[in-house]
Length: 206
Image 1 (cartoon, rainbow, N blue to C red):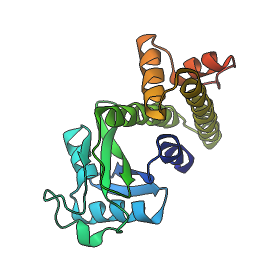
Image 2 (image 1 turned 120 degrees about the vertical axis):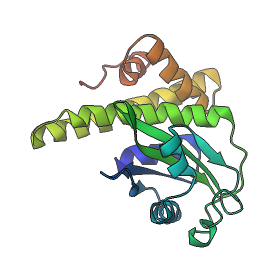
Image 3 (image 1 turned 90 degrees about the vertical axis):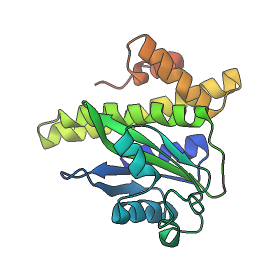
């Protein structure tokens, strides 16, 4: 899962990214981040039960802040955060009928988030959801290992297709990924299948 999260900041140019998941009591807990600064964001929110990512989980929608260090919605967060954490965006990761966690990213400077940013994050969160759904179905360790390898292959194919689309159509990574996800959804195919088709390759097996 850490490898999948690392793709987010590498593809979209964020300073860092992370995942939080809810426990049995529906309390968000730290799962994985790409760096120490991001870890401070997730640990602080888990400790306080408040913050943009917590709000994204409970309201089941994207939540952003231009500068979390100055945002009066969560004034208690700032003293607990690494100084490099400024602009933050969180989107829900869903499984079944509702959210089970959040995908979170941050920038090291104040940043006005655009709709294209949140749409790209929501689209990538859906890829994580598909990987989670596949892993949940695995009943044995060997099957789980196969699913995790599939997740890695899945990530590589999608990442390469995004790079191809960026070069061919002069798109940003966010635009390329959002477009790829929309085409896959409209045609009722897996993102990996469409990505492989674009590259002229065979998709990783389900």
